[in-house]
Length: 176
Image 1 (tube, helix red, strand yellow):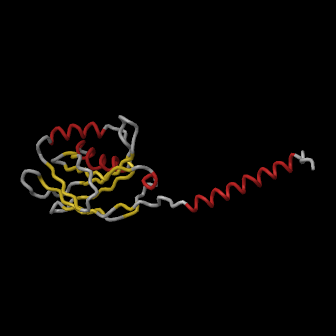
Image 2: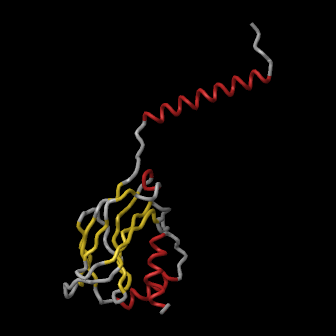
Image 3: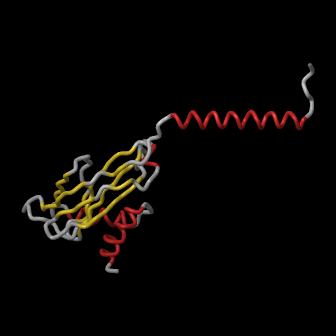
């Protein structure tokens, strides 16, 4: 039997084949577990002065998750959460689903804990997966950290954490 040379019949056959292939592929994908949402763990901590051991109240604490970046480049920020320390220097991050879907499927580093306080400047803190975090600040080299902050304030980083830090640190320093 000779094959049909009807172009319309050939197109219908090709569409039918592609449709069957798409359904088969979707069926296979449904069998593979997806990474799904990432849960950011609940964390509580305290911020104290390194020398006096006194609590540091009113500091903005940032919990930063970064992704793998190109070699030599700053890794992109996937998500940042922030909170303020209370009178006893304590802070809390509640458990929640990561707002960035990139964290669900890509390699993530963090969390890292940084803080900003008008007297201490911007302090880059440790990376840890612990549920309890102890942060320490020192007034030593605070002037240098304030100068580093001026460089940050003129940067173009546009993730939510950077915008928040500019709100609390850069406008404060400029007297706005």
